[in-house]
Length: 347
Image 1 (cartoon, rainbow, N blue to C red):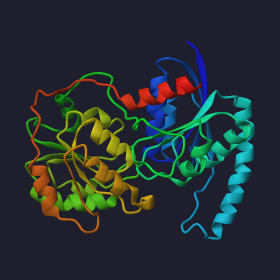
Image 2 (cartoon, rainbow, N blue to C red):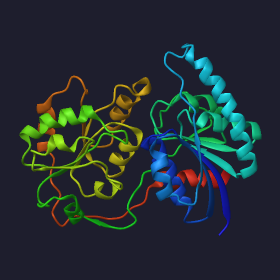
Image 3 (tube, rainbow, N blue to C red):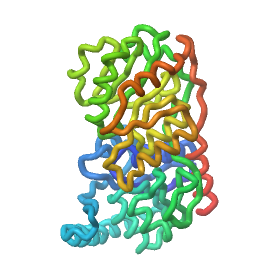
């Protein structure tokens, strides 16, 4: 197989990491890959890349994002640090001599993209959210192509709509896989609860109230505070589920933040969903993501500070349970195919 040398970077959350991973895994089927991956210190990439992409060369960066409001004096120092770091990155990339770069947004990508631009090496951007981040806004006009996940995404140039790549099983999945999560009754409705790659105390608080009145439903709850939910026999808690996407096709619904990857998976698996947008998201993009999701699947949106527990309970009670012998039949995600086809054509 032909070898492809690719520089990759993305901003330190699952929303940035998993689209890049899906792209890399798809390319592995057709090429020998040589990957140079720039990581954020202490974030998800440091934990996941050694397992997911063991052959990748990795560089950990100290880059810090700009503070809001942008006229903060600390940002002057951060910009100087960014420019200094970019010079070192330029030398590393020049020695690596890549075919192209693939960047999924976030402040860590800024010095890497700047180095690629100075070296005149083509790069591609992927924007997961309905409202793009600062780095993608700044550098999209210099990109070979910027791939967007929502057709109406504003403020970017050189765009093409591809959707957001998601992870999916490479085989059919039977509902009985839920038995691996300490569930005993496959006939009982099963809901996945998760707060994104960084977790969510707010979702924990909301669901603690919901669990008081939903003994008729099984919950698989990803949380950093398992001890809090021990009194609920129908709630099975996990600190982390490495491949949560493997059960998404056979569960009956989900309670989730409205980050880009979560939204893409909810739509791909056609999940009934309770969406609780994080108010700290830049330009309130999680709320916009959630509203877009309502156009595609059965869902309700809950304000994390002003919510109705009864509304959540009623929504969950009205979800139909899949049969115990239900099978999710393997299907592929067109988003990553679309991205790859555009890159093949342009390169």
